Length: 171
Image (tube, rainbow, N blue to C red; front, side, top):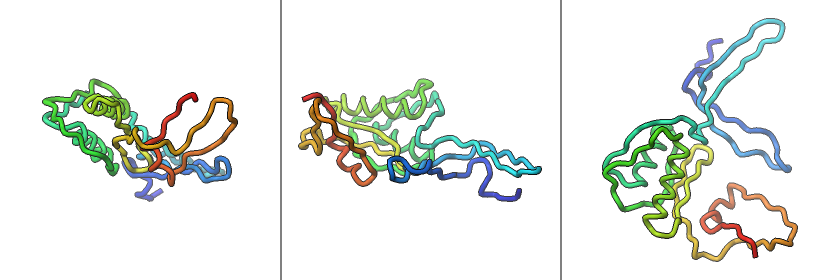
């Protein structure tokens, strides 16, 4: 098949159907392999790496950068957009140490929070965007749940701004 949109390195978007009556979140993948089968029933099998999880490992060392600059560089290299809050301390080096990019991003969020003294940064990947944001832990929670309450809720893309102040605890 001569479909150049189905070639290694190209992006593919996947929806996994409906969950609880709502369409699932769009996932972005990078095609790793395409296998065509011809015969009585033609088929195409596509293997793709989920860009949102950043599963690849690296031993890269980032020199003379802030944590935010490092996260921006990782997002750009993965072909993802970046939305984030700045950090100020420049590190002579930040070594990834054979961790996956996602593990390293979570570690950087912890380091940024330790730098501020309040553990207040989070890092997540949604769709084609890496979010590296400072949490507003002093903000009033958008939802409080008591242990004896039976409640069901779902955090949607539209409510992602609430994530700045969302936490869970027993009351």
